[in-house]
Amino acid sequence: MRCEEFRRELDETGEITSPAARDHLAACADCARAVALWEEARAALRELDREATPPFLHARVMAHLRAAERERLAPRRPWRLAARGVAALAALLAISFAGWIVWRVAPEAPVPVETKAAPRADERTPEPAPVTLPPPLPEAPPAPATASPPRAPSTRPAPVAQREEAAPAEEAIPVMEGQAKPAAVAEPSATPPALGTVAEGGAAPPAHLSLSRRATPERETAEGTRAARAQTARQPGGEALAMAARYAAATRSVEIACILFADTGEPPRSLTLPEPLAPAPGAEIGFTLLPDGELRFDEPLPEGSEPGALAERLRRLALSPGDYRLRRDG
Amino acid sequence: MPLAGGDEEEPSSRFERELADPAPGPEAAARGSELRRAVTRALARLTPEHREVLLLCEMQGLSYEEAAAALGCRLGTVRSRLARARWALRQHLEGIWP
Image 1: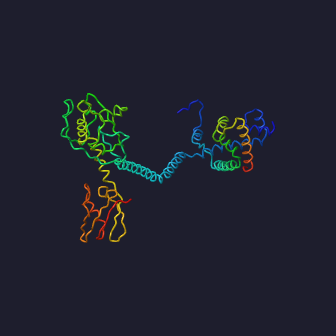
Image 2: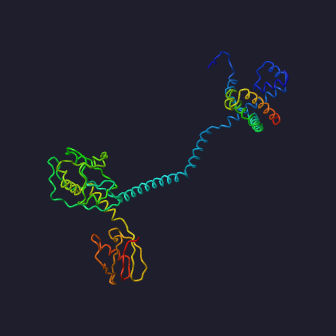
Image 3: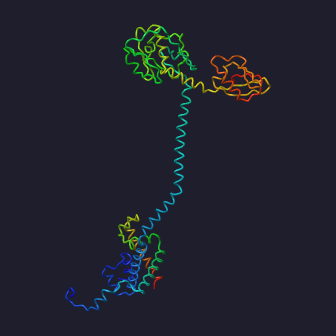
Protein backbone atom coordinates (compact mmCIF):
# COMPACT_ATOMS: atom_id res chain seq x y z
CA MET A 1 0.00 0.00 0.00
CA ARG A 2 1.26 3.37 -0.87
CA CYS A 3 1.06 6.44 1.35
CA GLU A 4 -1.69 8.02 -0.80
CA GLU A 5 -3.87 4.94 -0.47
CA PHE A 6 -3.20 4.83 3.27
CA ARG A 7 -4.11 8.50 3.72
CA ARG A 8 -7.26 8.05 1.62
CA GLU A 9 -8.39 5.15 3.80
CA LEU A 10 -7.58 7.20 6.87
CA ASP A 11 -9.72 10.09 5.60
CA GLU A 12 -12.60 7.86 4.52
CA THR A 13 -12.87 5.74 7.66
CA GLY A 14 -11.14 7.83 10.30
CA GLU A 15 -9.23 4.82 11.58
CA ILE A 16 -6.94 2.08 10.36
CA THR A 17 -8.69 -1.28 10.14
CA SER A 18 -7.45 -3.12 7.07
CA PRO A 19 -4.40 -5.42 7.41
CA ALA A 20 -2.66 -3.73 4.47
CA ALA A 21 -3.00 -0.37 6.15
CA ARG A 22 -1.66 -1.75 9.41
CA ASP A 23 1.34 -3.13 7.58
CA HIS A 24 1.93 0.22 5.92
CA LEU A 25 1.55 2.02 9.23
CA ALA A 26 4.18 -0.17 10.79
CA ALA A 27 6.59 0.52 7.93
CA CYS A 28 6.00 4.27 7.18
CA ALA A 29 7.03 6.84 9.76
CA ASP A 30 5.30 9.74 7.96
CA CYS A 31 2.00 7.91 7.85
CA ALA A 32 2.45 6.90 11.50
CA ARG A 33 2.99 10.55 12.35
CA ALA A 34 -0.09 11.52 10.34
CA VAL A 35 -2.16 8.92 12.16
CA ALA A 36 -0.89 10.13 15.52
CA LEU A 37 -1.72 13.73 14.62
CA TRP A 38 -5.18 12.69 13.52
CA GLU A 39 -5.78 10.79 16.73
CA GLU A 40 -4.73 13.81 18.75
CA ALA A 41 -6.92 16.08 16.64
CA ARG A 42 -9.90 13.77 17.10
CA ALA A 43 -9.35 13.73 20.86
CA ALA A 44 -9.06 17.51 20.82
CA LEU A 45 -12.38 17.73 18.92
CA ARG A 46 -14.09 15.69 21.60
CA GLU A 47 -12.47 17.87 24.25
CA LEU A 48 -13.83 20.91 22.44
CA ASP A 49 -17.29 19.40 22.53
CA ARG A 50 -17.05 18.90 26.28
CA GLU A 51 -15.67 22.38 26.79
CA ALA A 52 -18.36 23.83 24.60
CA THR A 53 -21.05 22.63 26.97
CA PRO A 54 -19.99 23.52 30.48
CA PRO A 55 -22.14 22.37 33.38
CA PHE A 56 -25.29 24.35 34.07
CA LEU A 57 -25.01 25.96 30.65
CA HIS A 58 -28.53 24.88 29.77
CA ALA A 59 -29.95 26.20 33.02
CA ARG A 60 -28.12 29.49 32.62
CA VAL A 61 -29.27 29.90 29.04
CA MET A 62 -32.87 29.15 29.91
CA ALA A 63 -32.77 31.54 32.85
CA HIS A 64 -31.39 34.22 30.60
CA LEU A 65 -34.10 33.57 28.04
CA ARG A 66 -36.83 33.71 30.66
CA ALA A 67 -35.45 36.97 32.03
CA ALA A 68 -35.28 38.43 28.54
CA GLU A 69 -38.85 37.33 27.88
CA ARG A 70 -40.04 38.94 31.09
CA GLU A 71 -38.20 42.11 30.20
CA ARG A 72 -39.69 42.10 26.75
CA LEU A 73 -43.22 41.62 28.06
CA ALA A 74 -42.97 43.92 31.03
CA PRO A 75 -43.25 47.26 29.22
CA ARG A 76 -46.14 46.04 27.10
CA ARG A 77 -48.28 44.78 29.92
CA PRO A 78 -49.57 48.19 31.05
CA TRP A 79 -50.50 49.01 27.49
CA ARG A 80 -52.38 45.80 27.13
CA LEU A 81 -54.26 46.41 30.34
CA ALA A 82 -55.01 49.96 29.27
CA ALA A 83 -56.22 48.78 25.89
CA ARG A 84 -58.52 46.25 27.51
CA GLY A 85 -59.89 48.87 29.85
CA VAL A 86 -60.53 51.30 27.01
CA ALA A 87 -62.28 48.59 25.02
CA ALA A 88 -64.49 47.68 27.95
CA LEU A 89 -65.32 51.33 28.57
CA ALA A 90 -66.13 51.88 24.91
CA ALA A 91 -68.43 48.86 24.91
CA LEU A 92 -70.16 50.12 28.05
CA LEU A 93 -70.63 53.57 26.54
CA ALA A 94 -71.96 52.09 23.31
CA ILE A 95 -74.48 49.97 25.17
CA SER A 96 -75.54 52.93 27.30
CA PHE A 97 -75.90 55.14 24.25
CA ALA A 98 -77.95 52.50 22.44
CA GLY A 99 -80.20 52.15 25.46
CA TRP A 100 -80.62 55.90 25.68
CA ILE A 101 -81.47 56.07 21.98
CA VAL A 102 -84.07 53.35 22.35
CA TRP A 103 -85.56 55.03 25.42
CA ARG A 104 -85.54 58.40 23.69
CA VAL A 105 -86.95 57.33 20.35
CA ALA A 106 -89.45 54.68 21.34
CA PRO A 107 -92.01 57.04 22.96
CA GLU A 108 -91.96 59.36 19.93
CA ALA A 109 -93.66 56.74 17.80
CA PRO A 110 -97.40 57.18 17.41
CA VAL A 111 -99.19 55.68 20.32
CA PRO A 112 -101.43 52.79 19.46
CA VAL A 113 -104.49 52.17 21.54
CA GLU A 114 -106.08 48.79 21.59
CA THR A 115 -109.82 49.02 21.55
CA LYS A 116 -112.51 47.54 19.48
CA ALA A 117 -113.11 50.93 17.85
CA ALA A 118 -109.63 51.10 16.37
CA PRO A 119 -109.87 52.21 12.75
CA ARG A 120 -108.58 50.12 9.98
CA ALA A 121 -105.04 50.54 8.77
CA ASP A 122 -106.09 52.29 5.57
CA GLU A 123 -108.13 54.84 7.52
CA ARG A 124 -105.38 55.85 9.86
CA THR A 125 -102.98 58.72 9.52
CA PRO A 126 -99.44 58.49 10.81
CA GLU A 127 -99.69 61.76 12.75
CA PRO A 128 -100.01 61.01 16.44
CA ALA A 129 -102.34 62.92 18.70
CA PRO A 130 -102.88 62.95 22.43
CA VAL A 131 -105.33 60.47 23.74
CA THR A 132 -108.51 61.81 25.29
CA LEU A 133 -110.46 59.20 27.01
CA PRO A 134 -114.24 59.13 26.80
CA PRO A 135 -116.17 59.71 29.99
CA PRO A 136 -117.60 56.68 31.68
CA LEU A 137 -120.99 55.78 30.45
CA PRO A 138 -123.62 55.43 33.16
CA GLU A 139 -125.78 53.21 31.00
CA ALA A 140 -123.13 50.56 30.71
CA PRO A 141 -124.78 47.21 31.12
CA PRO A 142 -123.67 45.05 33.95
CA ALA A 143 -121.07 42.49 33.18
CA PRO A 144 -122.27 38.98 32.56
CA ALA A 145 -122.22 36.62 35.42
CA THR A 146 -119.39 34.68 33.90
CA ALA A 147 -117.20 37.72 33.41
CA SER A 148 -114.66 38.67 35.97
CA PRO A 149 -115.61 41.58 38.24
CA PRO A 150 -114.11 45.03 37.66
CA ARG A 151 -110.65 45.15 38.99
CA ALA A 152 -109.19 47.76 41.24
CA PRO A 153 -106.89 50.31 39.63
CA SER A 154 -103.52 48.84 39.05
CA THR A 155 -100.34 50.01 37.44
CA ARG A 156 -99.80 46.70 35.74
CA PRO A 157 -101.86 45.59 32.78
CA ALA A 158 -103.96 42.57 33.32
CA PRO A 159 -102.59 39.53 31.58
CA VAL A 160 -104.33 38.62 28.41
CA ALA A 161 -104.82 35.10 29.55
CA GLN A 162 -106.56 36.36 32.70
CA ARG A 163 -108.97 38.37 30.63
CA GLU A 164 -109.65 35.44 28.43
CA GLU A 165 -110.28 32.91 31.06
CA ALA A 166 -114.07 33.32 31.27
CA ALA A 167 -114.73 34.03 27.63
CA PRO A 168 -116.87 31.44 25.90
CA ALA A 169 -116.06 32.76 22.45
CA GLU A 170 -113.04 34.77 21.56
CA GLU A 171 -112.36 37.31 18.89
CA ALA A 172 -108.99 38.77 18.21
CA ILE A 173 -108.54 42.49 17.83
CA PRO A 174 -105.27 43.46 16.21
CA VAL A 175 -103.13 46.09 17.77
CA MET A 176 -101.71 48.25 15.03
CA GLU A 177 -98.67 49.30 16.89
CA GLY A 178 -97.12 52.48 15.58
CA GLN A 179 -99.96 53.24 13.15
CA ALA A 180 -103.11 53.83 15.14
CA LYS A 181 -104.40 57.36 15.63
CA PRO A 182 -105.19 57.66 19.30
CA ALA A 183 -107.60 60.60 18.93
CA ALA A 184 -109.78 58.71 16.56
CA VAL A 185 -109.63 55.73 18.77
CA ALA A 186 -110.78 57.57 21.85
CA GLU A 187 -113.38 59.68 20.17
CA PRO A 188 -116.72 58.52 21.48
CA SER A 189 -118.68 59.74 18.47
CA ALA A 190 -116.69 57.67 16.03
CA THR A 191 -118.71 54.89 14.61
CA PRO A 192 -117.10 51.71 15.72
CA PRO A 193 -116.98 48.77 13.41
CA ALA A 194 -119.18 45.88 14.20
CA LEU A 195 -117.89 43.30 16.51
CA GLY A 196 -115.85 40.64 14.89
CA THR A 197 -115.28 42.50 11.65
CA VAL A 198 -111.59 42.74 12.13
CA ALA A 199 -111.12 39.16 13.05
CA GLU A 200 -113.47 37.98 10.37
CA GLY A 201 -111.92 40.14 7.66
CA GLY A 202 -108.51 38.63 7.77
CA ALA A 203 -106.27 36.25 9.51
CA ALA A 204 -105.96 36.47 13.24
CA PRO A 205 -102.90 38.43 14.39
CA PRO A 206 -100.31 36.97 16.66
CA ALA A 207 -101.31 36.48 20.24
CA HIS A 208 -98.97 39.15 21.60
CA LEU A 209 -100.47 41.74 19.26
CA SER A 210 -104.11 41.13 20.02
CA LEU A 211 -106.60 41.64 22.77
CA SER A 212 -109.36 39.21 23.27
CA ARG A 213 -112.80 40.21 24.35
CA ARG A 214 -116.01 38.46 24.76
CA ALA A 215 -118.39 38.44 21.84
CA THR A 216 -121.68 37.98 23.58
CA PRO A 217 -125.02 38.92 22.05
CA GLU A 218 -125.45 41.68 24.62
CA ARG A 219 -122.28 43.40 23.52
CA GLU A 220 -123.17 43.35 19.91
CA THR A 221 -125.36 46.34 20.52
CA ALA A 222 -124.04 49.86 20.18
CA GLU A 223 -124.35 50.56 23.85
CA GLY A 224 -122.55 47.44 24.71
CA THR A 225 -119.75 48.33 22.37
CA ARG A 226 -119.41 51.81 23.79
CA ALA A 227 -119.50 50.52 27.32
CA ALA A 228 -116.88 47.95 26.59
CA ARG A 229 -114.70 50.54 24.91
CA ALA A 230 -115.07 52.93 27.81
CA GLN A 231 -114.30 50.18 30.28
CA THR A 232 -111.15 49.30 28.41
CA ALA A 233 -110.09 52.93 28.24
CA ARG A 234 -110.83 53.55 31.90
CA GLN A 235 -108.67 50.72 33.10
CA PRO A 236 -105.76 52.44 34.77
CA GLY A 237 -103.47 49.57 34.05
CA GLY A 238 -104.63 49.14 30.49
CA GLU A 239 -102.43 49.43 27.50
CA ALA A 240 -104.29 52.51 26.31
CA LEU A 241 -103.50 54.58 29.35
CA ALA A 242 -99.94 53.39 29.50
CA MET A 243 -99.38 54.39 25.92
CA ALA A 244 -101.16 57.68 26.42
CA ALA A 245 -98.90 58.46 29.36
CA ARG A 246 -95.84 57.62 27.33
CA TYR A 247 -97.11 59.79 24.50
CA ALA A 248 -97.73 62.72 26.82
CA ALA A 249 -94.26 62.39 28.28
CA ALA A 250 -92.76 62.30 24.83
CA THR A 251 -94.75 65.33 23.77
CA ARG A 252 -93.63 67.33 26.75
CA SER A 253 -90.02 66.66 25.93
CA VAL A 254 -90.30 68.07 22.40
CA GLU A 255 -88.74 71.47 21.95
CA ILE A 256 -90.33 73.85 19.45
CA ALA A 257 -88.26 76.49 17.69
CA CYS A 258 -89.87 79.90 18.11
CA ILE A 259 -89.14 83.49 17.15
CA LEU A 260 -89.64 86.41 19.47
CA PHE A 261 -90.38 89.73 17.77
CA ALA A 262 -89.89 92.89 19.76
CA ASP A 263 -91.76 96.11 19.08
CA THR A 264 -88.95 97.99 20.76
CA GLY A 265 -86.80 97.80 17.61
CA GLU A 266 -84.60 94.97 18.81
CA PRO A 267 -83.84 92.23 16.28
CA PRO A 268 -85.92 89.07 16.49
CA ARG A 269 -84.64 86.39 18.82
CA SER A 270 -84.74 82.68 18.28
CA LEU A 271 -85.56 80.42 21.18
CA THR A 272 -86.90 76.98 21.79
CA LEU A 273 -89.81 76.22 24.03
CA PRO A 274 -91.32 72.95 25.19
CA GLU A 275 -94.33 71.86 23.23
CA PRO A 276 -96.90 72.83 25.91
CA LEU A 277 -95.46 76.34 26.18
CA ALA A 278 -95.01 77.07 22.50
CA PRO A 279 -97.76 78.89 20.59
CA ALA A 280 -99.97 76.86 18.34
CA PRO A 281 -98.92 76.59 14.70
CA GLY A 282 -99.86 79.81 12.92
CA ALA A 283 -100.82 81.54 16.13
CA GLU A 284 -99.08 84.34 17.96
CA ILE A 285 -98.76 85.11 21.63
CA GLY A 286 -98.44 88.78 22.38
CA PHE A 287 -97.28 90.02 25.74
CA THR A 288 -95.95 93.10 27.43
CA LEU A 289 -93.06 93.17 29.81
CA LEU A 290 -93.46 95.95 32.32
CA PRO A 291 -90.49 97.79 33.87
CA ASP A 292 -91.18 96.16 37.21
CA GLY A 293 -90.74 92.73 35.63
CA GLU A 294 -94.40 91.86 35.40
CA LEU A 295 -95.39 90.04 32.23
CA ARG A 296 -98.90 90.42 30.87
CA PHE A 297 -100.26 88.46 27.96
CA ASP A 298 -102.34 90.45 25.49
CA GLU A 299 -104.97 87.74 25.28
CA PRO A 300 -105.73 84.79 27.48
CA LEU A 301 -103.77 81.80 26.40
CA PRO A 302 -105.69 78.89 24.93
CA GLU A 303 -107.08 76.31 27.23
CA GLY A 304 -104.50 73.81 28.25
CA SER A 305 -101.61 76.25 28.06
CA GLU A 306 -99.40 77.05 30.96
CA PRO A 307 -99.16 80.84 31.16
CA GLY A 308 -97.24 80.81 34.42
CA ALA A 309 -94.56 78.53 33.09
CA LEU A 310 -94.33 80.46 29.84
CA ALA A 311 -94.04 83.77 31.67
CA GLU A 312 -91.30 82.38 33.85
CA ARG A 313 -89.48 81.08 30.82
CA LEU A 314 -89.76 84.46 29.06
CA ARG A 315 -88.52 86.35 32.12
CA ARG A 316 -85.34 84.30 32.03
CA LEU A 317 -84.51 85.80 28.65
CA ALA A 318 -83.64 89.12 30.37
CA LEU A 319 -85.77 91.10 27.96
CA SER A 320 -86.05 94.83 28.15
CA PRO A 321 -89.49 96.25 28.93
CA GLY A 322 -91.76 96.52 25.91
CA ASP A 323 -94.19 94.68 23.71
CA TYR A 324 -93.34 91.31 22.19
CA ARG A 325 -94.91 88.77 19.90
CA LEU A 326 -94.03 85.11 20.01
CA ARG A 327 -94.72 82.59 17.29
CA ARG A 328 -93.37 79.36 15.93
CA ASP A 329 -90.45 79.44 13.57
CA GLY A 330 -91.30 78.37 10.06
CA MET B 1 -4.78 -9.18 54.09
CA PRO B 2 -4.01 -11.48 51.18
CA LEU B 3 -4.65 -10.17 47.66
CA ALA B 4 -7.02 -12.04 45.41
CA GLY B 5 -5.45 -13.93 42.58
CA GLY B 6 -2.60 -15.63 44.35
CA ASP B 7 0.42 -13.61 43.04
CA GLU B 8 1.95 -11.45 45.71
CA GLU B 9 2.58 -7.80 44.77
CA GLU B 10 4.98 -5.50 46.44
CA PRO B 11 3.14 -3.09 48.77
CA SER B 12 5.09 -0.12 47.42
CA SER B 13 4.16 -0.88 43.81
CA ARG B 14 0.55 -1.43 44.77
CA PHE B 15 0.34 1.94 46.57
CA GLU B 16 2.03 3.70 43.68
CA ARG B 17 -0.49 2.20 41.30
CA GLU B 18 -3.49 3.06 43.44
CA LEU B 19 -2.35 6.54 44.31
CA ALA B 20 -1.19 7.50 40.81
CA ASP B 21 -3.04 10.44 39.28
CA PRO B 22 -4.39 9.43 35.87
CA ALA B 23 -4.70 13.09 34.79
CA PRO B 24 -2.04 14.32 32.35
CA GLY B 25 0.88 16.14 33.77
CA PRO B 26 1.52 19.82 33.33
CA GLU B 27 3.47 19.36 30.14
CA ALA B 28 0.82 17.11 28.60
CA ALA B 29 -1.90 19.48 29.75
CA ALA B 30 -0.14 22.40 28.10
CA ARG B 31 0.33 20.42 24.90
CA GLY B 32 -3.31 19.41 24.90
CA SER B 33 -4.37 23.01 25.38
CA GLU B 34 -2.18 24.12 22.50
CA LEU B 35 -3.54 21.35 20.32
CA ARG B 36 -7.17 22.32 21.04
CA ARG B 37 -6.35 25.90 20.11
CA ALA B 38 -4.76 24.69 16.84
CA VAL B 39 -7.74 22.47 16.06
CA THR B 40 -10.07 25.42 16.66
CA ARG B 41 -8.10 27.54 14.20
CA ALA B 42 -8.11 24.70 11.65
CA LEU B 43 -11.86 24.26 12.04
CA ALA B 44 -12.33 27.95 11.39
CA ARG B 45 -10.63 27.57 8.03
CA LEU B 46 -12.93 24.81 6.83
CA THR B 47 -15.95 25.43 4.67
CA PRO B 48 -19.27 25.42 6.52
CA GLU B 49 -20.30 22.12 4.92
CA HIS B 50 -17.05 20.42 5.99
CA ARG B 51 -17.18 21.96 9.44
CA GLU B 52 -20.72 20.87 10.21
CA VAL B 53 -20.27 17.30 9.03
CA LEU B 54 -17.05 17.04 11.02
CA LEU B 55 -18.68 18.41 14.16
CA LEU B 56 -21.61 16.04 13.82
CA CYS B 57 -19.66 12.89 13.21
CA GLU B 58 -16.42 13.46 15.15
CA MET B 59 -17.52 15.71 18.00
CA GLN B 60 -21.12 14.61 18.56
CA GLY B 61 -20.49 11.00 17.57
CA LEU B 62 -23.39 10.73 15.15
CA SER B 63 -23.44 7.86 12.67
CA TYR B 64 -23.41 8.48 8.94
CA GLU B 65 -27.13 7.78 8.73
CA GLU B 66 -27.93 10.19 11.57
CA ALA B 67 -25.75 12.86 10.03
CA ALA B 68 -27.45 12.38 6.67
CA ALA B 69 -30.86 12.80 8.32
CA ALA B 70 -29.70 15.86 10.23
CA LEU B 71 -28.19 17.51 7.17
CA GLY B 72 -30.93 16.44 4.80
CA CYS B 73 -28.57 14.83 2.33
CA ARG B 74 -27.77 11.35 1.11
CA LEU B 75 -25.53 8.89 2.89
CA GLY B 76 -22.93 8.94 0.12
CA THR B 77 -22.77 12.68 0.32
CA VAL B 78 -22.01 12.47 4.02
CA ARG B 79 -19.27 9.91 3.43
CA SER B 80 -17.53 11.90 0.73
CA ARG B 81 -17.97 15.22 2.51
CA LEU B 82 -16.60 13.80 5.74
CA ALA B 83 -13.55 12.34 3.99
CA ARG B 84 -12.76 15.71 2.41
CA ALA B 85 -13.30 17.43 5.76
CA ARG B 86 -10.82 15.12 7.48
CA TRP B 87 -8.28 15.62 4.75
CA ALA B 88 -8.70 19.42 4.93
CA LEU B 89 -8.40 19.42 8.71
CA ARG B 90 -5.25 17.36 8.60
CA GLN B 91 -3.77 19.67 5.98
CA HIS B 92 -4.45 22.74 8.09
CA LEU B 93 -3.17 21.05 11.23
CA GLU B 94 0.07 19.90 9.60
CA GLY B 95 0.68 23.49 8.58
CA ILE B 96 0.28 24.95 12.07
CA TRP B 97 1.09 22.00 14.32
CA PRO B 98 4.73 20.90 14.59
